[in-house]
Every structure is written in structure tokens, then in C-alpha cells.
Image (cartoon, rainbow, N blue to C red; front, side):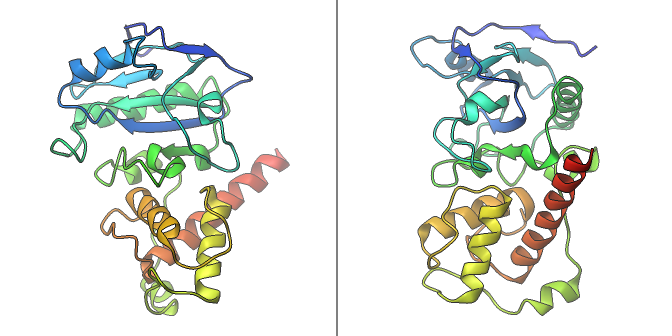
Length: 253
């Protein structure tokens, strides 16, 4: 049984059904106390189910059976009320605005253990374990490129793919803002199929650049620039294959 500290927030309401998505955030405030205070403030109208502090301690603010107010406006795999569908975990970190830093070992281990524990109670596919920035690329960056998504996936939670060099080389040069054509359409379509809310047709505009940055923060963190080079696109193809295989397995089971 995980040690949980109860720290109730009044900011929740009823779900429409069981959660099938998990959204990871960072708190993005200068201190843990400041962040927790805001999540418990009825006037703020924000909350999360859990907060994981840097020392690995875990606070529960909202019961999993209730709809916490953590995601805001966004889309993932066609779901537009992500609060209703998800469990939200806030990870204490000052974020890009206040001195973004690596997540401590104790904190990462606690997040992995918490995610594993949550998945014993709810059916949450790997392709629906996402970042806040995945559902809202136009306005969110968290938990960001320093979060160890590879390690989380290695523990069995989420998707991860690292393409071989020859696969990267086969895709050729970069796609970037202003580009049009088949390559851009394939990129947009692939990101849309994975779950991002952008339209599958169109040019390489700011919507696409923001979505590519979000994808990179999660699946290609060594380069977060909104430019779809060969490695970014090869990684997308691999992650899509994993997501499709998971979906087919789920149907068969």
C-alpha cells in the first residue's frame, strides 16, 4: 500500500464514467507549498488528484472517483473533456518560468509507483498516459522535456520508441514552418492519429509547430524546436505503431 497524505481540495465534481487517461503535470510554481495552496483554494478553481513532492511524498487532493480540475481546455484522441476522462498527477517542479530542473530520484520513483498503483484500479492504455502539453500544445509545456518518459515507459507505463539510424536517414531532411506538400500532410495525419487535436490537413503552420514541440518534449526530448527532422518523424512512426498494436490487442482481448 502506497503511503498517501490526505490533503483535500474542494475543487472537484462528478465524473461521467470511469477514468481511462492519466495526465502528468508539473506544478510550475516557486514552491511546493505555494502550488498545494493554490490547488486547495476554492477561488482558484483548479486541482489535481495527486501531488508528488520532490522528496517522494504523495498527497491526495481529490478522490480518483471524482473529476478534478487539472487539464483545462484540450484534446486527446478525440476526447475534449479531458478532466472527465483522466486522473491528474501534479509533480512539484518550478517549471520553465521559475528555473526548470531535473526531477529528483525519489520523486521519479514515487511517480512510477503511483502510476502503477493507479493502473491496478482503472483500465488506462499506455497511449493514454500523456503530458499536459500533449493535450494542450498551444498553451502548455509541462511536465516537459526533463521528465524521464523513457524510464516511465521502461517500467511498463506509456509508450517509448527509439528509431534506428537507417530509419532516420530514410526519411531525409527537415520539415518546418512554411512547408507544404505530402510530407507535411503525412506528419499532420500521424500526429492526429496518435491523439493530438490538430486538424489532419493543412500546411506547416504554428499549430503544427506547437504540436511537434509537444511531441518532442514527450518522445524526443533532446531537441525541442518544433522542426520535424528525420528523427522526430521516425520516432512518431514508431510510437504510432506501438499505439496501434496496443489498440488491436485491446480489441482482441
